[in-house]
Figure 1 (cartoon, rainbow, N blue to C red):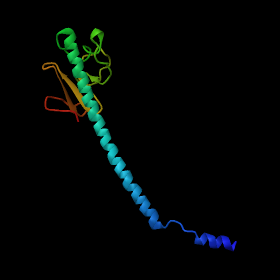
Figure 2 (tube, rainbow, N blue to C red):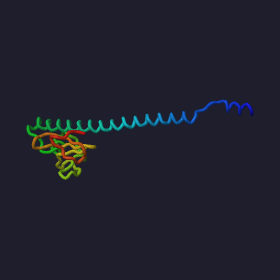
Figure 3 (tube, rainbow, N blue to C red):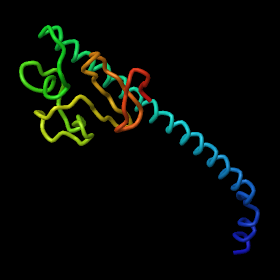
Amino acid sequence: MRRMIERARSEGGFTLIELMIVIVILGILAGIVLFAVNGINDRGTSAACKTDQSTITTAVEAFYAKTGNYPGNLSPALTTGASQFLKWDNSFVDGTGAPTTAATQTSVQRNGNGYTILYDTASHSVWAAPGTGSTPDATTNCP
């Protein structure tokens, strides 16, 4: 029994200071990771906005190439019938900003996650702006 007690006393362990240093280092590493992940989300939203803007621009130009004139709207002109260049979903919004409930409802705007895409029927341009429900114009860009 005496040997076991002497053996336990002679074995070393971690001191409180050593444990606190390890915890501080782990906290710093966790902060760095959280900061890096936040930047990834922002870049993802920007990439999604640019992709949607490019897709809608391509669909408008494809409609023009096929029919000889530009569409009067995104939905239903580009989402139904023989000239379906876009897949309809409820991210297309009507004139009041409310989601369209059917592919046959008229829409010139699409709300993404943190951005808005607008098809200008007068200039046949596709504009983007940060924020859902915002008003894109020639001076705004993807977030």
